[in-house]
Image 1 (spheres, rainbow, N blue to C red):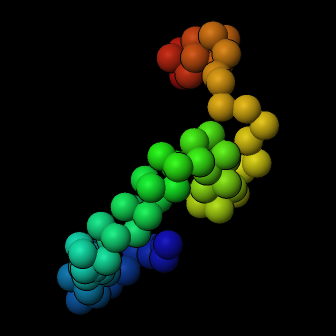
Image 2: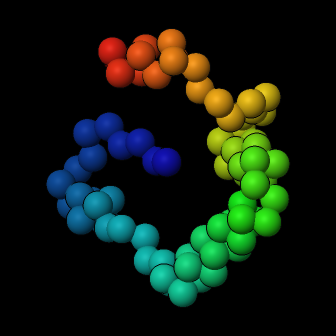
Length: 73
């Protein structure tokens, strides 16, 4: 992500442009992810979480304390 600090007004439109993407390509990628999860379940979730989020999950179950802490935040 690019960060801009006090950009000049002439650059605002360019900065605010959303990158173009092809919905069909995105749909194919998402479909592949869903297929992996359906086929391999929790193992796929753990692997994909490591790939996309950089987190190595030991378990997927969230404790009641973690839920309550998240609600309170």
